[in-house]
Structures are given as structure tokens and as C-alpha cells.
Amino acid sequence: MLEQFDKAFESRIRLHIMSVLVANESFDFSSLKDLLDVTDGNLASHLKALEKEEYISVSKSFVGRKPNTRYTATKRGREAFSNHLEALEKLIKQQK
Image 1 (cartoon, helix red, strand yellow):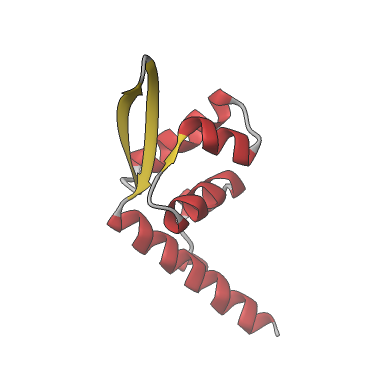
Image 2: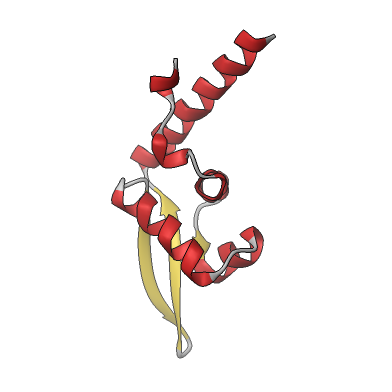
């Protein structure tokens, strides 16, 4: 049963990041930081881990003169997140 859980989602911050990205088309770094109430470095390390798994994609652009980094859940990331949630649901149902 536990082998169905994805280690990439063991962190509550990564779970929250994926929840936001699956529910929205994309989200920018500053908005994620404010929503999750985490530091730049903490958020960046969790985003890098998800990017390494190819669960999110990154696009960089400029809004006026300010850099803007946006994140989007990939198809692979959406599937992995869905599978992880299904495993959680099964575990919860078994405990009843």
C-alpha cells in the first residue's frame, strides 16, 4: 500500500504547491510564496524538487521591467498527484 505513495509529495509544502497548480492554469512565484507563507529559499527548493521530477514546468518572462516566473503542473505531475491522492483515499477508507 505504501509503495503507491509518491515520495515527491511527502512534504506538505509540495502537496500544497501541486494542489494550487492542479487547480489553476499556472501560478507565479510571488503569489505562491504569499499563499504558502514560506521564504524564497524554502519555496525555491521545493519547486526545484518538483521540477526535477518533471511534475511542474517553469516559464520566465518580464512584466514591464520586472522578471516573472510562472509554474504549471505538467501532465506527468497531474497524473502523479492524482495517483497519490487516490492512494491517500484508499488508506483513509481502510482505516474506517
